[in-house]
Image (tube, one colour):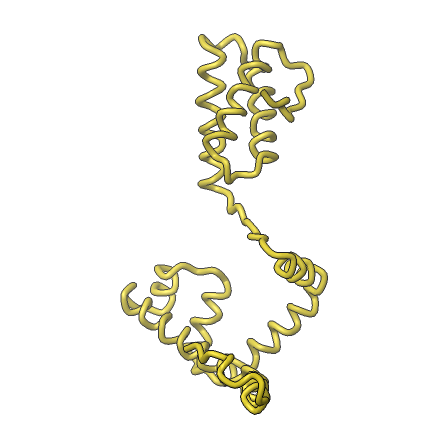
Length: 194
């Protein structure tokens, strides 16, 4: 049995025990949720239960159901973001993005301005709505369209944006490909991926 990472102050031993069992159950049921978030919820539950301990018939049953309900409510209402980390290069990319967030914002703004100049007024409006995290239904309402028509308009706008971004892509791949093909010792070692 592992030692719990919960910190109780002024909580009765019966409630501590019940909340620790509920915490272990929540960790087992929700392995992808950060244990620190579950620990905070468990500590809040313990404080609440201590304040209202006279109203429970079964402390363990209440602790279990309340703990699971708190985690489910957190998953429903909060956006929990995960950063998948695999290779060291991916970790360095994440660290670089955090360190260069101002530069990334500037580059992103410049890129959006370049794309905006090549899009129609309607596509720019759709891009603005998508950037402000509007749902398809909200976009349909703001554009005065049916949801199916709005989905199609969003799809077309995304295709035009992708086309604009593909046109802005550097041409260094072609130069590297030509230099590899011209070297005699690397003939037929490269495969064309489509």
